[in-house]
Length: 445
Ligand SMILES: *[C@@H]1O[C@H](CO)[C@@H](O)[C@H](O)[C@H]1NC(C)=O
Image 1 (cartoon, protein in one colour):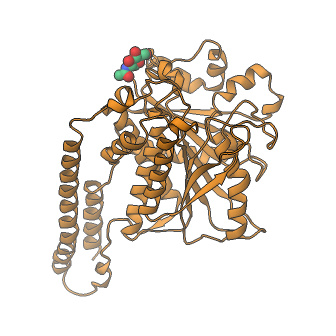
Image 2: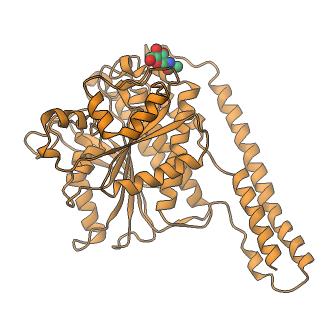
Image 3: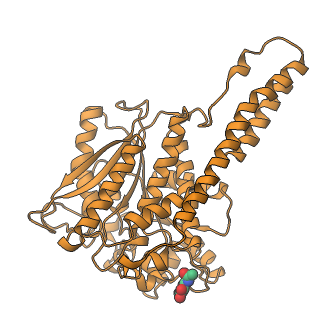
């Protein structure tokens, strides 16, 4: 009996590797080409494309079974008449509505400045988020139940907004209006409706994706500007040594978090997930920030630190829901500090031709997979996501030989399903890559 159980698990274990689902890079490419390869800005001439991107995100969240809604807000520092919309998708866990729920968030902004096509900034982040949605909800459909609730948000107006007036912000020069309104307006109301006023649940925290697909193996493609170099070396001695010994190649993801907070837990989980995936040429560097007494630091120091706070996670860090803000980490390629993004950041060449390379999309795929593993684990799932055959529990009599045969036979449907799934997948990929053999870039000049 012991032998057969052992055998069962060995076979299941091997199968789980064979069937392991990794990022659908064709899906990410399609999202980027069709919806995140042109300017998504609020001025009239860019508005239609921006709305199409927003509606696509809504449609995909909905299609994958999330409870989907818009968060509509006004931002008078940008427009006194317009309204803006972030897209929110929720996968309720079984702990939803209770104090035991440990919510996990994933966020990426979909708007752009008007000077850019916004492929890396931040088509990459949204496409990766949709891929994470696809993989996690796929497991749900295959029987996974999660204890914890997951919230996905595509933020509007990350690139615009001002703290003056309505909000009292510690980062006065940082725009980030969409996530600021989300934290001040949407989240407290949603928590109080669904969880009551008494005990807002603790959160695992939020992973923010912004400008994260540029991968560059050239020496010195990772820039650390001289003005911030001493502060960088002091703050991140390990990362600095590692980057310098690798001849400043921009071949790594930046994992940015605050050191003495719950961010560190989220960051450690992500790092473990990343390392488990292999594909070692896509590297990672941890950048743990010490923000204690930020307001007492010199303005020089503050200006250096603001470089690491200039995406939506900055608002989570300074949100006043509790003393330390909410746990949040930022995954990024470092934007204007790397490779082609040095000249293309917030410019026209952050476009398909420059950014949508195989290396970049595979790098993005590894990031998406590591997020899936991290969020899957933190959601406290039960069930594997590959349809489970638990009838081996009922085998109680018969010789060892019979049990072993039964156990092997039980694996057959799983093996067949697995082979068919892989064949189907490669057919689809073939079909899709045919569709994209002759891409037209005409409208993106
Ligand atoms: C890598 O970065 C350099 C600048 O350091 C840039 O000239 C080059 O085009 C980049 N290569 C790729 C493949 O992105």
